[in-house]
Amino acid sequence: MPLVSVGELAILIVEPSSFQQKIICTELEQLGCQQIDTAATITEALELMSRHKPDLVISSMYLPDGDGIDFVSRIRTDESLDSIPYMLISSEDRVDILDPIRQAGSVAILPKPFKINDLQIALQATLEFVDPSELELEHYEAAELRVLVVDDSEFSLKHICRALENIGVGLVERAHDGQEAINLLQQQTFDLIFTDFNMPLMDGEQLTQYIRNSSNQPSVPILMVTSELNETRLAGVRQAGVNAICNKPFDTLQIKAIIKSLLAD
Image 1 (cartoon, rainbow, N blue to C red):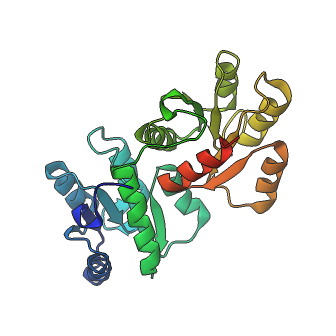
Image 2 (cartoon, rainbow, N blue to C red):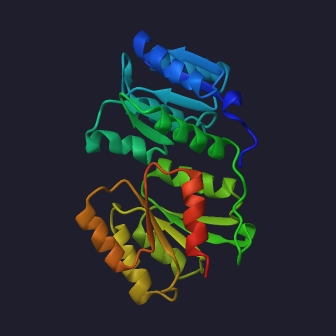
Image 3 (tube, rainbow, N blue to C red):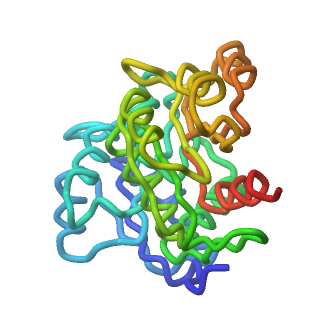
């Protein structure tokens, strides 16, 4: 378990409504959070973050000087801020609007109004990301694992790779699409493959089919980390040979549990 406690997390809330700010602050305080700052705009938030780097940023989708997509993109493209966990709290439920937030490596997307239990789970996911415990496996040493991560979103790719490195995975190779992944598979062997679903040139289902039917590593475990919600499409992926599917956003504890399961034999 993480050594850092909820009370030690420095949290920045970015929300233009003072009423909503108060609701979120109250719920966080009930869960034990003690270090909470607030901002009403992206500009104000970035200024605060430049002076004091928070452990977690919680924002709404729509802000006076931009939206959550703009905000998280600016965080992820700033080398001094790009590792900060990001959580969205919003009444927005359109899949196409929320997808860029999922792809940007958020720790959680909560609705308005949110349940305090969901907020608590999101805080625990943040703790595990800020101060992760090392992956412990029965038949493998985490430091010796060779993992291939395939994702066309640079933000998502960095987020997954960072999460794996944080839990002690020794070698993490990156590919931005299925074809690039095939090139790596022809040169190296891997203990585990993480892949996105929707990618250009070759999607996750086609990559899985290639691995299972045409590669020299047909039995390597494949974990799909995706924002895809269409059950018909996901059924096709399972039939193609994916061993497990994890939704974006994911938490590190969930990923560790899936890896343990996939590598148990």
